[in-house]
Image 1 (cartoon, one colour):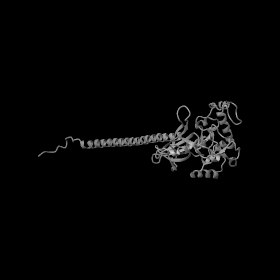
Image 2: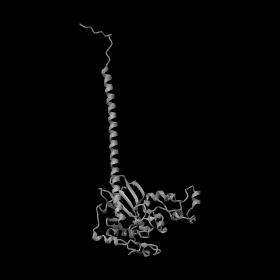
Image 3: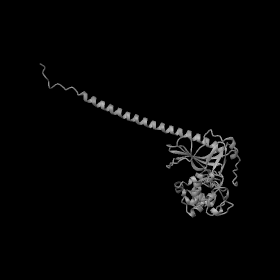
Image 4: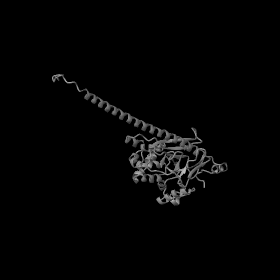
Length: 346
């Protein structure tokens, strides 16, 4: 019979240490799994965003090309431009393109206020819409005039090189504005910047037009700067849905002032502002498209290409871009080609 010796050393409990090691290994594997899963999720999200961006860029390039071809082969009308490749609405109404939910807004630049060839009364009305006081509007208009003219003669409330040096600002270029952003270089304008941006005033101006104002493509807001009441402006825009467009005629009885300096109606010009958006893409593309068929460098130019945050407002298309294979029937081609785009045509 074997006797138990209580003085012999006990065997180590190796099973407990093994359990701890297993638990540590499992914890480490869990961490690795979480990291791998998180990395995979981030990678999938990155791939998704990249795919959306590529799709958006492809859609933008395709639609941009369609707009260029249609516009370059068309004749400007009062509210549209029309030709053998189709018809485009030019008063900023949403137009559907190829992709589901893809929208394009085309705005005739003559329906905006040209800051290089502005009407002082219309400028004053615009500045008041953008929260400028009467005195501030007067000073801003004079300062802008001094900035873009070629002389060094200071207007009453304006500013020339001396005033800019005194305020430690870059001197005026004494040349036309190259972009809308350049207005913030003009003395005094930076004070208006916050309210200007908040009220969307940047979308109401251009620096690439010819100074003519087309009431047929202007918004309700800008029609009011031309002297129309809010009700009259809203009624005019509403009438566009029925295809109504003003003919050229003096409008002194409507807005007051010199009937020889301001004509009602008007034809679309050679510059379009294009706003292009896709569903579920957080940014939109905005640029000014200038048609230059008789100038060196090609039949068109793009100015001020910008990527902006997509607005929250959901728009509904009221027209469609002409399909890529659209061809006006031969028996109708003489109609748009025969129309005059003279600013004094009837």
